[in-house]
Length: 227
Image (tube, rainbow, N blue to C red; front, side):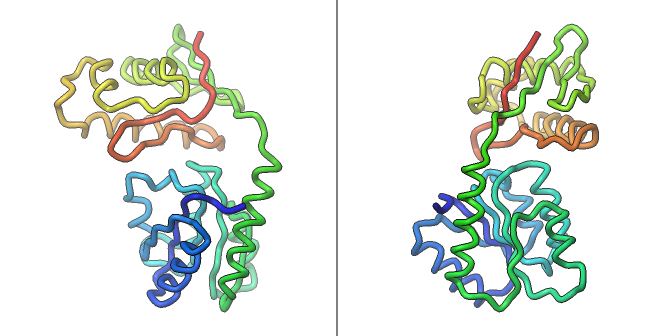
């Protein structure tokens, strides 16, 4: 049981070359990132089915990278690292990793670890948590009951996701709903999405389901009910 797509984040050229080749031979579509910021800057950073990360990385540290990923995705995360520290295992597991493997490690062991995490994730799937949109109060209510205040623009944006019912909403449609020209720059929309996502992250530890789809638009990957 292997993921369809995987992000390999490691700055060891030789290691990533041969490991990515081995994973591709197993039928996995692998994208390699040698810098953690390169992954986070990628438009599809949170769309991968699985993440395989080192800890000593250019950009933000691997532990911090895992924390960021855990706020945006429930995909499997396995750490493969040669970092030596008494509390390294505790750090990565507390950050949200599913498994830790110490280098050097055989490629077949990496595949087995990926498969084990995928299998457990599939067996432990639970119902998608429900978010609520309170139109009258202009509030988004997280599954844990936390309420996030919404501006008029935020409310119009969330209405797009209610109508989409879990499907991707094209940028052009969102711009029209917000009363802007479809051919205008999307910088303002990106900023609006970013600010809303950050407010949600600061308000609740719940996974933020507001995600981008590279070259297409945005999607709210959770059940969303409006009243």
